[in-house]
Length: 247
Ligand SMILES: [Fe+2]
View 1 (cartoon, rainbow, N blue to C red):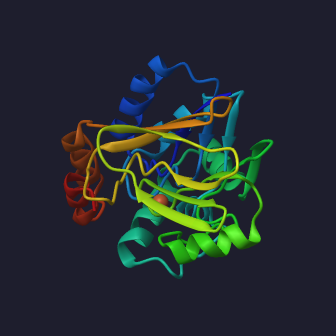
View 2 (cartoon, protein in one colour; view 1 turned 120 degrees about the horizontal axis):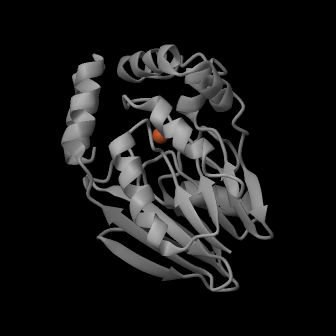
View 3 (cartoon, protein in one colour; view 1 turned 135 degrees about the horizontal axis):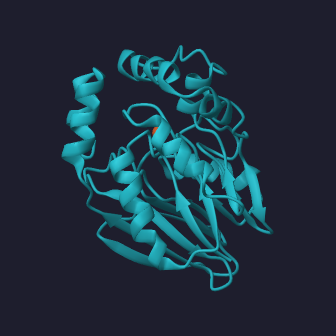
């Protein structure tokens, strides 16, 4: 199966639309969405509408922002900017889209034998996986060979082969990883709507589970339009500013 992997769109329609248009040429058969459809950006309905149109081969899990927007979580651990954006989003989503966000399933979710998706960690949907120590804990307690995760907004790869643990930041316009049969992998496609690795371009992946090849892509989009939309909506200025630097 060829999967298109999308994460952390964060209501950034310009970024999401650009990724979808570009990805259409990649001939994928199913779509994996790793959560945080909304929150931060100013186009929540456009993004949720587009995700809802992606069925029937669509697998989604909820993100921490989706939970706060839907009222599943109070957002007590959010900073003021994130909380303001979440509350703004709750007030803007159509009733149908709010219901859709509220009903997004909790990860981890199995998508085929040996492949799973989650938002933060497969052990806890809200936990960030940044380091080899974080990955080690997951590898020692969670068996699935290939897991795609989001949440950190940093395209990255963690792998365990025998007793060797590896970490790699996935940089550049595109690249390819060939997974080895005995290895186990935690793979982050990065964020579409709010990259945080100092590269402002939208980030996504294609995974071919038959060939066991992962390809990542970064693509430029109309950042100025996303920023203008955020400012016009009256959302905190910092949410617009950070898009330009990818932080
Ligand atoms: Fe996120």
